[in-house]
Image (cartoon, rainbow, N blue to C red; front, side):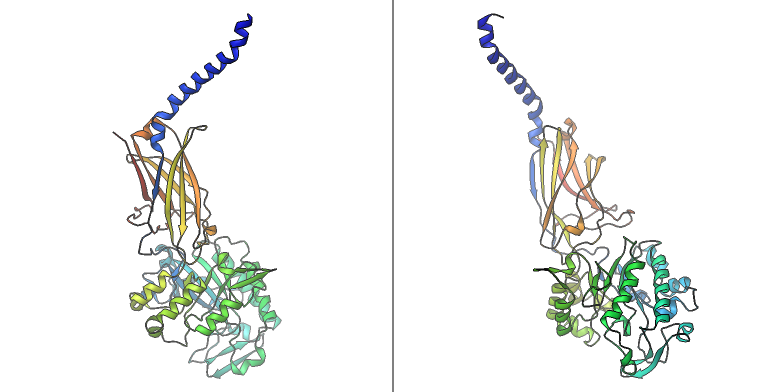
Length: 456
């Protein structure tokens, strides 16, 4: 090679590279840059009603459950296992209208109980079990009923078998979504015991053994969340919390301090960030008072406890239509919306990237990680569906998470395309409505959130 050519070779190579890069840019850049966009969205002023949250009226009261997603099953031991080893599933499903609720897509909160005071003499523990274990019939200011000796080994063993059978029944589908660990005490509240059975009042340590039975029986059910009424999770790690005290300011405040706060070393965490919180309205305060005169206090307590549901003590159908009831409902559960969408090009992969920023303006997370899907349409044809990498359980109130969807670039995108979003239950039968101002989902739960028009 001649010396002058050798000296100019680097410059020649650089010139070739410049030409190649320029050619590549001329191929890539025209058109693609027009796909860059940023859109900001507002949240709707109305809070949509969504699955797995809200009021949970008693399931046997069909009229009160008409407009709710949740129903509450307060299940006595005597109804579940009237004869030893025989579980009356058919009777339970009939009394609580379970098949009808399943068809309408509702979910259930279930509390298993052994002692419900009433005006009539009765026993909520099966007769066959009363005959072989200890307990006391009572008639006092709380009502009439039967208090079992929760420390009785025969009773504990029978209870374990009943809970295991109950867990097996719940696992057959996702109808029962929340199980409140009850069993011990009047209405499942450990600290409530009949006067005549004061010496049978269960300790926290004893209750922990019952918690452990629930934790073991329901350990394999990923579609269900446990909640405990204990001040501390002693036997059911990862469980949420429930108490029927909403409206009682003093009891609610104590619950927040003892039941909803966790100390881990020097750090303080809040239970609701990882597990659901629910419970009923206090029976000591009239419902009309909770919805009217004491409304501001009821709202404050609902908000500060980060409740996901309220039941079985909750407004009836007529009361659910009042402004106070609606305001309380808005303070429960999750409320998700898309606040920002940015579109960019990844030139290395030749992909259009869509960066979605989701916000939670509710009071609690959505504790199930239902799939979040992106849809890309050209005209009316869906050309791409992609599940976004968003874990709803990590989207806490007041926070935002940005995730990215991708679409392989083609010139057809420059002619126009639109974007849809949906959050669906794993079986696709239920959808979450985003609190998106001016955007309502279609029949398939898809929100059309963006449209790119061809520029002229």
